Length: 322
Image (tube, rainbow, N blue to C red):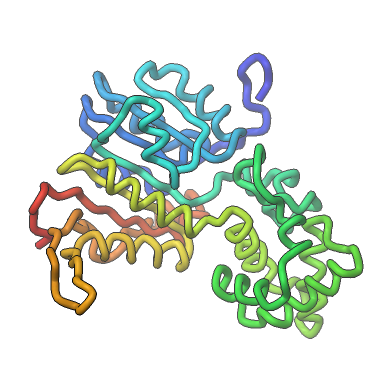
């Protein structure tokens, strides 16, 4: 961002499932809301515009996104933007003196700015460093991760996080190039996939899913997503809403599992298996099936095609999840 407040590197941004997200959040003008993934502030601005005496807390792991969101939300005095990880949501809110909120939004997708900036290392379509960190101020880069990971563990990651079928073959090719000292750029990683699948004419589809899997591993995304969902449920006041938008099956499994567990009674057992106590469900799932974008939204924004939205409502103590 320029010193004059301009955003020369920020492309136009279309938030995914924006209308549906706000509908399920049921934003009240005096409520307190958290946008856990501020990104380019698309959802945040829509929430803030509906508030009068309420408050919006927007956070993001990416320092560049935080700077842009602060600039775009500067006209909303009821909004604050924080550099933080939504997996540590309770600590972030405690630092702001907030204990309970009326709504939480998690959008696990990536902004165009992140995907199209070759310096971030998320894209195989441009040559760039193997970084892939969401938080560029800390943590291990993809290059450092690939320099130490064992071949078997890498194959597991490719299969589990990217649904990569020839995972062992590709992992072996990546490790082979790494051991030759040729695993420093996005081009090196893409070349390794092509070498593993040299029988494929043209560019293998697996390049995209290999990049996805390694990005998820570098940022520990699924663990933080689970922790963020659990902490979001903790901080919601009764009647508060949790809305999550995800873009691939691994993320959706995490969301479904957290909501399923939170919507069932919890049993505390004695060592011999007898029930010590039963705790009531914590949330009611509002979307038995995920909400998907319609044809018009997909036409406007092709990246929305794989988006899935799920929502839940926090129950009163002892409430029923029927």
